[in-house]
Amino acid sequence: REAELEVEVGNMKRAKKELEEEAVVAVNERAALQKKVRACKEELESVRVQHASALASHADAVCVKDAEFARLQLNMDNIQGEFEGANEQTRIQQVLITTLQHDEEAAATAVAELQEQLEESHTLLCQAQEKEAQLRADITSHKKHTNAMAASLAADAAATAAA
Image 1 (cartoon, rainbow, N blue to C red):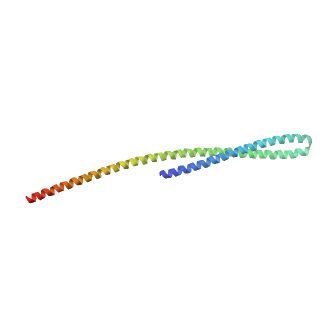
Image 2: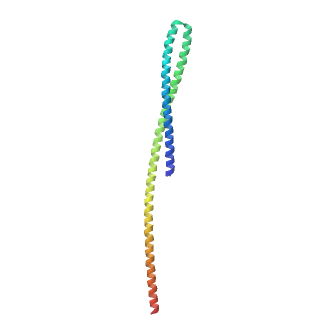
Image 3: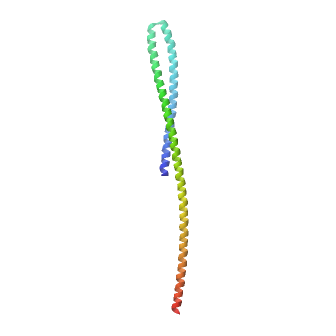
Protein backbone atom coordinates (compact mmCIF):
# COMPACT_ATOMS: atom_id res chain seq x y z
CA ARG A 1 0.00 0.00 0.00
CA GLU A 2 2.84 2.37 0.91
CA ALA A 3 4.61 1.61 -2.38
CA GLU A 4 1.38 2.23 -4.30
CA LEU A 5 0.93 5.55 -2.54
CA GLU A 6 4.53 6.52 -3.27
CA VAL A 7 3.99 5.66 -6.95
CA GLU A 8 0.77 7.66 -6.91
CA VAL A 9 2.58 10.60 -5.28
CA GLY A 10 5.27 10.37 -7.96
CA ASN A 11 2.62 10.31 -10.70
CA MET A 12 0.89 13.29 -9.13
CA LYS A 13 4.18 15.18 -8.93
CA ARG A 14 4.87 14.45 -12.62
CA ALA A 15 1.33 15.53 -13.55
CA LYS A 16 1.74 18.67 -11.45
CA LYS A 17 5.06 19.44 -13.15
CA GLU A 18 3.49 18.94 -16.58
CA LEU A 19 0.61 21.24 -15.66
CA GLU A 20 3.03 23.83 -14.32
CA GLU A 21 4.98 23.62 -17.59
CA GLU A 22 1.74 23.99 -19.55
CA ALA A 23 0.84 26.97 -17.36
CA VAL A 24 4.21 28.58 -18.18
CA VAL A 25 3.58 27.96 -21.89
CA ALA A 26 0.07 29.44 -21.54
CA VAL A 27 1.46 32.50 -19.75
CA ASN A 28 4.07 32.92 -22.51
CA GLU A 29 1.37 32.52 -25.16
CA ARG A 30 -0.74 35.06 -23.31
CA ALA A 31 2.16 37.53 -23.29
CA ALA A 32 2.73 36.94 -27.01
CA LEU A 33 -0.97 37.46 -27.68
CA GLN A 34 -0.95 40.67 -25.64
CA LYS A 35 1.98 41.84 -27.74
CA LYS A 36 0.04 40.99 -30.89
CA VAL A 37 -2.99 42.89 -29.55
CA ARG A 38 -0.83 45.95 -28.87
CA ALA A 39 0.74 45.70 -32.31
CA CYS A 40 -2.68 45.37 -33.91
CA LYS A 41 -3.97 48.33 -31.93
CA GLU A 42 -0.99 50.40 -33.06
CA GLU A 43 -1.44 49.23 -36.62
CA LEU A 44 -5.17 49.92 -36.36
CA GLU A 45 -4.50 53.44 -35.15
CA SER A 46 -2.05 53.94 -37.99
CA VAL A 47 -4.64 52.68 -40.45
CA ARG A 48 -7.25 55.02 -38.96
CA VAL A 49 -4.93 58.00 -39.54
CA GLN A 50 -4.23 56.85 -43.08
CA HIS A 51 -7.95 56.26 -43.58
CA ALA A 52 -8.81 59.83 -42.58
CA SER A 53 -6.16 61.16 -44.96
CA ALA A 54 -7.42 58.99 -47.79
CA LEU A 55 -11.01 60.22 -47.33
CA ALA A 56 -9.86 63.75 -47.94
CA SER A 57 -7.80 62.96 -51.03
CA HIS A 58 -9.41 60.10 -52.89
CA ALA A 59 -12.70 58.14 -52.78
CA ASP A 60 -11.18 54.90 -54.15
CA ALA A 61 -8.54 54.91 -51.41
CA VAL A 62 -11.38 55.04 -48.85
CA CYS A 63 -12.76 51.71 -50.08
CA VAL A 64 -9.33 50.06 -49.89
CA LYS A 65 -8.66 51.39 -46.41
CA ASP A 66 -12.14 50.34 -45.20
CA ALA A 67 -11.40 46.79 -46.31
CA GLU A 68 -7.97 46.87 -44.64
CA PHE A 69 -9.50 48.33 -41.49
CA ALA A 70 -12.13 45.55 -41.42
CA ARG A 71 -9.42 42.92 -41.86
CA LEU A 72 -7.36 44.38 -39.02
CA GLN A 73 -10.45 44.63 -36.81
CA LEU A 74 -11.24 40.97 -37.51
CA ASN A 75 -7.62 40.02 -36.73
CA MET A 76 -7.80 41.97 -33.50
CA ASP A 77 -11.09 40.26 -32.58
CA ASN A 78 -9.55 36.86 -33.33
CA ILE A 79 -6.48 37.67 -31.24
CA GLN A 80 -8.72 38.93 -28.44
CA GLY A 81 -10.61 35.61 -28.58
CA GLU A 82 -7.32 33.69 -28.41
CA PHE A 83 -6.24 35.88 -25.51
CA GLU A 84 -9.47 35.13 -23.61
CA GLY A 85 -9.07 31.42 -24.40
CA ALA A 86 -5.50 31.49 -23.04
CA ASN A 87 -6.77 33.22 -19.88
CA GLU A 88 -9.41 30.51 -19.40
CA GLN A 89 -6.84 27.76 -20.04
CA THR A 90 -4.52 29.32 -17.45
CA ARG A 91 -7.37 29.46 -14.92
CA ILE A 92 -8.27 25.79 -15.54
CA GLN A 93 -4.64 24.74 -15.19
CA GLN A 94 -4.36 26.67 -11.93
CA VAL A 95 -7.43 24.81 -10.59
CA LEU A 96 -5.90 21.48 -11.66
CA ILE A 97 -2.58 22.35 -10.01
CA THR A 98 -4.39 23.25 -6.77
CA THR A 99 -6.36 19.98 -6.92
CA LEU A 100 -3.17 17.99 -7.49
CA GLN A 101 -1.50 19.76 -4.57
CA HIS A 102 -4.40 18.74 -2.31
CA ASP A 103 -4.22 15.15 -3.63
CA GLU A 104 -0.45 15.13 -3.07
CA GLU A 105 -0.89 16.36 0.50
CA ALA A 106 -3.52 13.66 1.18
CA ALA A 107 -1.22 10.98 -0.23
CA ALA A 108 1.68 12.26 1.87
CA THR A 109 -0.53 12.09 4.97
CA ALA A 110 -1.52 8.51 4.10
CA VAL A 111 2.15 7.57 3.64
CA ALA A 112 2.99 9.10 7.03
CA GLU A 113 0.15 7.15 8.67
CA LEU A 114 1.35 3.92 7.04
CA GLN A 115 4.89 4.66 8.22
CA GLU A 116 3.57 5.12 11.75
CA GLN A 117 1.67 1.83 11.54
CA LEU A 118 4.80 0.12 10.22
CA GLU A 119 6.81 1.45 13.16
CA GLU A 120 4.12 0.22 15.60
CA SER A 121 4.16 -3.22 13.91
CA HIS A 122 7.95 -3.32 14.17
CA THR A 123 7.75 -2.48 17.89
CA LEU A 124 5.18 -5.25 18.43
CA LEU A 125 7.35 -7.70 16.48
CA CYS A 126 10.38 -6.84 18.62
CA GLN A 127 8.32 -7.33 21.78
CA ALA A 128 7.08 -10.70 20.49
CA GLN A 129 10.65 -11.78 19.68
CA GLU A 130 11.78 -10.79 23.16
CA LYS A 131 8.90 -12.75 24.69
CA GLU A 132 9.72 -15.77 22.49
CA ALA A 133 13.36 -15.63 23.62
CA GLN A 134 12.23 -15.45 27.28
CA LEU A 135 9.87 -18.42 26.76
CA ARG A 136 12.67 -20.45 25.14
CA ALA A 137 14.94 -19.65 28.08
CA ASP A 138 12.16 -20.67 30.50
CA ILE A 139 11.61 -23.95 28.57
CA THR A 140 15.35 -24.70 28.59
CA SER A 141 15.51 -24.01 32.30
CA HIS A 142 12.42 -26.17 32.92
CA LYS A 143 13.94 -29.04 30.85
CA LYS A 144 17.17 -28.87 32.88
CA HIS A 145 15.18 -28.88 36.12
CA THR A 146 13.01 -31.80 34.88
CA ASN A 147 16.10 -33.77 33.78
CA ALA A 148 17.76 -33.12 37.15
CA MET A 149 14.61 -34.31 38.98
CA ALA A 150 14.41 -37.40 36.73
CA ALA A 151 18.05 -38.20 37.47
CA SER A 152 17.42 -37.72 41.19
CA LEU A 153 14.33 -39.96 41.04
CA ALA A 154 16.28 -42.58 39.11
CA ALA A 155 19.06 -42.47 41.71
CA ASP A 156 16.46 -42.77 44.52
CA ALA A 157 14.82 -45.69 42.70
CA ALA A 158 18.21 -47.38 42.26
CA ALA A 159 19.01 -46.83 45.94
CA THR A 160 15.61 -48.16 46.95
CA ALA A 161 16.04 -51.19 44.70
CA ALA A 162 19.51 -51.86 46.15
CA ALA A 163 18.22 -51.59 49.67
